Length: 274
Image (cartoon, rainbow, N blue to C red; front, side):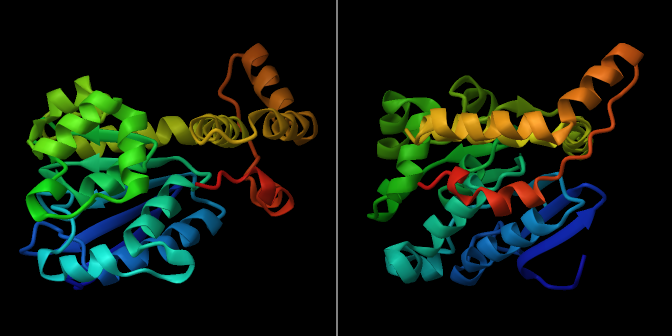
């Protein structure tokens, strides 16, 4: 870890790339510069051949208290190329990663912090986690992409409840709404995330990336049948199925070798476009 006190920092350890959200003294509130860092760091983790899992985590006691209030006007109104805001670009970069993403949530996960976490495939929280979506307290409208994702995750009734009231949820309440996928024991967040990353890393990355891509396509109402056909063809030529079957017959862990580098270069049409 460097001495930087504000910004995103990525550290690669084996098959895991951890992106740390850091803004000391501000509960890791996201500045406009930090939002803009996300697409680049996700792209670097995606291009790293050894990385199989991307973890997003807050530095210290909190995940993120959301957008930096001192920059709220700039963050909520600024548009980049294509008309998308920096927050939406960050969210889309996370959600469209072919490699599994995990939000490790401790302490506050508010507003923009939830927007980041919601874009991840897994959201592991401690019982100390507190989640809220607070645009109604600020006189702003939550990004459309983030509202849609909340509806997809928790349903329209819960989405309206949380967006309109801005009320705070405990980790247990968030788990009941599907906003948290797993709870870690007290003091066990690091170990829980490591175990999950090890589990994901031991599986066929072809299987993982294909099924993640298909689920995302279903949610986005994309052309599922054609992309499933592309993945089926990849299974036939990759050798992953034979590796898995032989390991099962030999009663030993499989040593899969597919990384996806060639696949994603050859099949950009399979990407989910939100």
